[in-house]
Image (cartoon, rainbow, N blue to C red; front, side, top):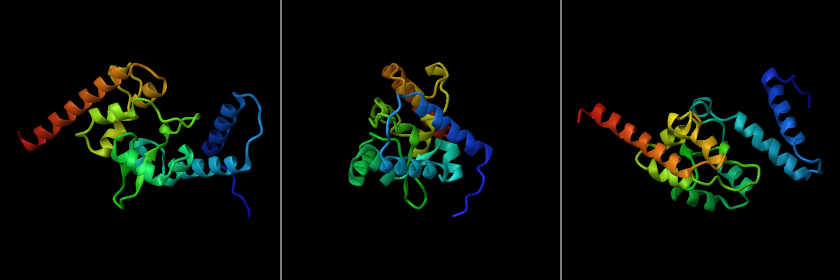
Length: 176
């Protein structure tokens, strides 16, 4: 199969991956893991453009299940319980922002608490909140804040403030 030349940003992506791998001690990687990582990387690049602009790169239910080593049903349960950030598209397909896919394959602490504080905000708005800089969190995105293990109380307070602002804007549009 003939390969096309990579675009400059595709080359940049591969270089960034190589830099990340080089920051760890050398080791052999299971060929199945290589294929899975390649598949996951390509799937994030194929995320719907509008969804990707809103919440960043996403993966599918089966890809998240494979990453975490749990069933699709467990992913759906975690989604319904507000333990994972998820957005459903108009075709009712679930998409999961990939910032949740930590290298150690452990779910990011604090997601459930923040999602609970955002329970009146639509899924897409809540998912977008995680990837937008937040002044209350020193201009860090809530996702980066949680990944870094910073103060969960501040993150949930920021989520409550966002939800309150959202609800005020809804009431203002409704004329209440």
